[in-house]
Amino acid sequence: MNVKKLSETTVALLADHKGLFAMDESISTCNKRFADAGIPQTEENRRIYRELIIKTSGLNESISGVILYHETIRQRDEKGIPFITIIEDAGIIPGIKVDIGMEDLAGFPGEMITEGLDGLRYRLKEYARMGARFAKWRAAMSIGQEIPSRNCIISNANALARYAALCQECGLVPIVEPEVMMPGSHSSKTCYKVTREVLTTVFDQLYLHNIALEAMILKPNMILPGENSGEKSTIKKIAEDTVKCLMDCVPASVPGITFLSGGQDPQEASARLNAMNQISESKLPWKLTFSFGRALQQTALAIWEGDDSNKVSAQQDIYHRAKCNRAANMGLYND
Ligand code: 13P
Image (tube, rainbow, N blue to C red; front, side):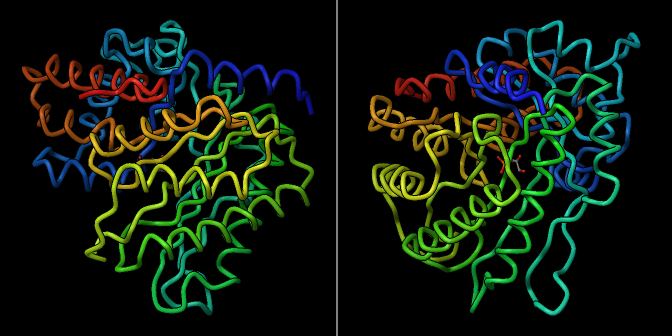
């Protein structure tokens, strides 16, 4: 394992208050979002939409890396130029989602396990040859009656660690994404407790698998009340709880934490990230930044509507949200 080379990628991804752009929705997730926006669900529309994102002028001012999906990493623009080339030419680092999604966890109704370890070493080598320099694997755990179970947490944490070890062996920086999901009626206190258990279990497994912690990135959720809990939490409380939870669980040798947005309103996600960076920049051991999907794309997709005449407005929205989140990394967000 070449830790020095991996660390260089990690440093570049976290440099200059920039963040990551998650545009790695699977075909079915992307189609679902298109369906909700009334956009025809075709491969060509998915290609046009991803081309729109990566060709957003000035994207590299706020974005250090983009996360692609296996369909997207092979795609080309309308002139035949590979997406990877366009991304690299913009000074942005290409990354790739490598899990293959979630399946029901056998014997544990209502719980899911992320799949994709079989043959992963060979897929990683191929992605590295294609130009990817980092990877992502998402484990998602719901909070509900008696869940997540200990087995669900351990099984997902173990898969994350096996994935991370393979990534480091193949020269890709692993983004380790254990997501405690927002849907549900749980309190923010429960979210804190579950996230704490999930993160400590994930780091146990990362130690066990000899992961070079300085050559990885953690992608967690923020500490939020469940979507249907009725609990109102302030920006300050969310920021303080999230920072405290991370301080409890994340070793100082991890260089960066890039949050997922998880269905938060885009402005709220930026404001919460901003508050964390305001209270903490001087005393935290890791960088706190974003790796948002929906919080960067949601409004742009609604503006685009699959209509080329809306392309520039959609790109302006992407540019604006990316810039807002870079400002949030400096504690200067004001939208
Ligand atoms: P969201 O920001 O929409 O949660 O997406 C981030 C991501 O990469 C999920 O795996």
